[in-house]
Every structure is written in structure tokens, then in C-alpha cells.
Image 1: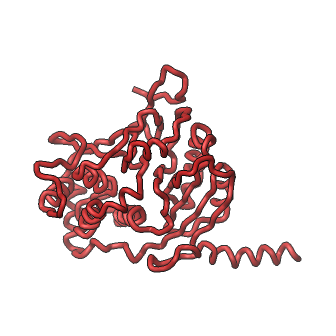
Image 2 (image 1 turned 45 degrees about the vertical axis):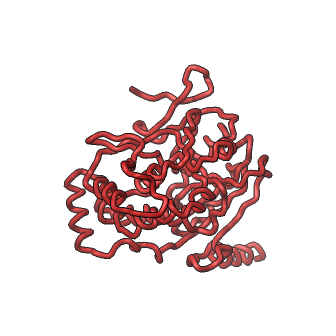
Image 3 (image 1 turned 120 degrees about the vertical axis):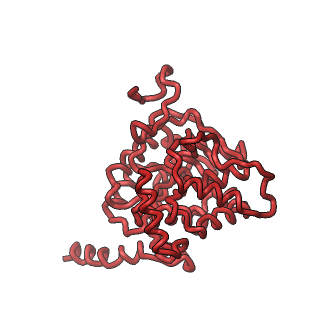
Length: 325
């Protein structure tokens, strides 16, 4: 009888512990924290995943590989962001394999969805055009909202009060044994972004619109022209920072009014909807325009997909990765 009563009370309490919140409220009521081993460094940093309940197997694979290869030395915390309620099973499973503290944040950011979408007919016309160009997700409203949600989270969410976050994608596997503290390297080099490699995509009309928006934008302290939005590009492709294995200094990003204002300007332009700009398109372009300090993480090996991976130093035996030709 007592067990039944306890289960009933938990079933009532948990939804309130992980309840939705609005951006003008303190996030305390929508965050569940699970304490694990004490962190071995004083740096204010966290591993970050944007995820949902259905990603659990991929999330566990990512946590296990990062813990085995790297975080077992430092016990940095994990932060899980979801726009929907995460189940108690998800939280129990993930916290059981993470060595650091775990925080689960539910953010129903519907107040942000569609902030840049002002012309539905134009949106439908552009989606049709981009689809004809072979641009993936050009017709996916959920994909566009997701990109906007991530950017707003990185720029504004109060629960991301860390100086550094290492953004990982569910399903990404960390493949190299590593003793280097990447967060300390970021601090040492005063870098805003740490990246493993670039990902190159086919140029489409939406990217041309992004470049034109940057060229038209005027702001105090803007570098003199000519300036470029990409690390390198050709007539047919453009290359940006890979967002799925990237360390971001939120202190540097949020504390730089020029970066924030340009990013918000591009959000307000509605290009995420009209031109299928992604959060990585926008962030990479903004950082490049302002010549923001970045740090290559050459030793951070990972596999995400056969065409998105990085496998350094294969001959030394410190990396367990094999990339097919």
C-alpha cells in the first residue's frame, strides 16, 4: 500500500518538477538535477545535447563514448535540453552512465517559434523554390523552428549559465583517448569557438540571400569591406563550422554585443524560414565576419555519419576509428 502511495505521489510530482516555463520566469521549476561525481576542475563548463525522448539510444552511445575516452578524467556536467518533457526513464538511463552532474531542461519556447516568419505566402514560394534546388528540409517547418530554438537557447536561455558548452549531437561517437582538457584550451587561447572540422554544403539561393544580408548590414565596429562569410568557399560550395562537435564560449558570444546584434538581426530577417538558413550557417557567418578567435581541436576524433567524421592520428593507437574510402 505504501509503495502504491509513493508511486502515485511521484507520478503527480514529476510533471511539476520538469514543468514548462516561459522565458520571463526563473527556470528553477523546469530543471531536474542529478548529482554524480565531483568535478575535477573549477571551470564553469558543461557538455550539451539538444535532444528528445526518442533519441535515448543515440544519446547513451554519445555519453558512453565521451565518458570512456575523455570525461572520466574531469567529470564535467551534462545538460540535456528538450522542447518536450523527458521521461524519468530517459533521465535515469542517462544519469547512470554520466560521471558528472546531469541537468534536464524542458523549454517550451513557443513564444519564439515563428518570430522571423511574417509572410506565409512568401515562405511557401521560397520553400518550393529551394525544394526544386534539392535543398534538404526546405519544406520542414519543424526543422526551421528547431534551428531558431537552438539559436535562442544559446543566446538567451538563463539555464545555460556556463562559460563554455560543448555541443554534441545524439549518435556522435568520440573515438580518441584524450587527456587534454579542451575547455582549458579554450580559456588559454581566449577562443569563442572550438571546432574539429568544417562541413561543406552546396550553395543554394538561400545562402546567396544570407551573404547579401550581411553585405547590407551596417553596425558600429563592423570590419571594413571586403569581408567573407565563410572560412573558404567555391562557386558551388560553402564551408562552415560543424555544429555537432563544437565548443562555444557563451561568455564571449553573449558578452559581445556585435555578435548578438548581428545574429538577432539575421533571426529577425526570417531567413531560417524563407531561405533555410541553419543555426550553423548563421553562427559561422557571424563569427567569420567579425574575425572571431577560433580554436581548431585537431585531436578530437569523432564519427557521426560516414560523411561527417574526423579521425586523427590513426597510427598511434590512441584512436579507435576506421573511415571507409
